[in-house]
Length: 390
Image (cartoon, rainbow, N blue to C red):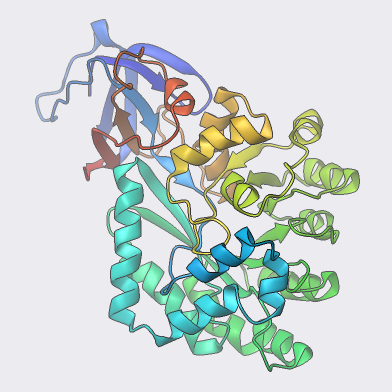
């Protein structure tokens, strides 16, 4: 495509450029005045448009059935998220509804959510299991995620350690997660995650689960320091975690460990806002050199927010990110949180993911205005792996 008014490369803005995609990769980025379209190429006029690497949503729970409206109303009435979970609601409500849904129903719901993300320029989506909490139910969710991916790149994460099923013995369930459930799910996953928090898993349980997943060849991730401080961020970082996510209550030792071992901080402003939590210590994370990614945490309970652009804006307004940090957080840094080199950037040799956006009416063609104006930005065109899918 040629005549792009502005292009966010994943780390900087360049202006008035042309981008050549060939064989699924970015072959060249040149000043528009020097660009020549090869005879065998399809030319797309990007005049007045903002180019972005395909966006990366690096933390979602996008496969589920049922509603959590009741939880929303209860929290507005003063009940806590952890209290609802401990009483058998919350995640357990979604587990029951998801278990009752057919594979066809779950596939249709998942594809509809993916399609809405793609409309907004999201080319890569991380999807967790965790609404099964039984061997077959967990593997079914991961199989659906792998099979249903159409125009997007889907990364799957095994999250059997999302909650202890009601009536199950804790030790027996952890044994199951680390043994037969992991064995059934690992072939369909690229990472393992654990929800270490009040009402979920202890630090000792999280260590055992993450070590088992790592031994099975899965990358390590963690829901860390969200509702209560547990110390899991430091633990996960020492295990080589790609990312620790949430981090509202992380301590200095956790930040130091993440910086030392290169673990990405995934900020989830939708969940922070819905649960009325304090902001993570972004200034400390930034000062320590911890890279900052931003994701939706899209789920029906704590973050029913499917618009990654909205979360980029909220990360600035509620957590103190700059617009440039937010743009990197939904592109290049988010790709690093998934261990995907060449994704989330537009540079020679990178994966050919590109999304083009019209600036809001009357605005300049600057990627930062897409952060300034909250949400609702629909891509004019999207390419995934060099193929135009919108």
